[in-house]
Amino acid sequence: MGLSKTEEFVQADITLAKYAKALGHPARIAILRILLERNTCICGDIVEELPLSQSTVSQHLKELKDAGLIKGDIEGKKVCYCINENNWRHAQQLLQSMFVSYTSCNTSCC
Image 1 (cartoon, rainbow, N blue to C red):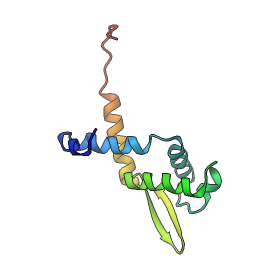
Image 2: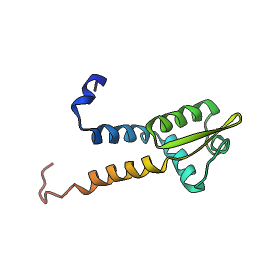
Image 3: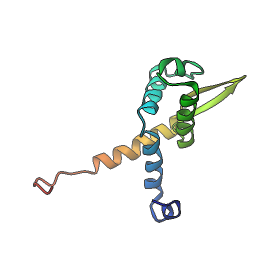
Image 4: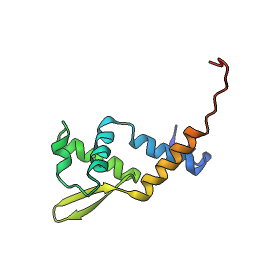
């Protein structure tokens, strides 16, 4: 889908797609699990937890931050990351509303 077509969709769908894209890589899921598990800001520990280089982890952190699922604060030369609570809850609501809207057709439609 071209970028010029996004304005034809409702904002909630555009936002949900942004969150889904950020969740679309196992390394990003692993990063989110680490942040959720620790429930605190983490600086350098993320790289030690993953089988990826520092630069690759940084790219994944950037994707998660750009999507708004995490936030980072600069402390000296380090950036400490944590879950962006407001956007995390928003993503949860959007995903949940989509999943709960499904009702079985009780037939073998496919």
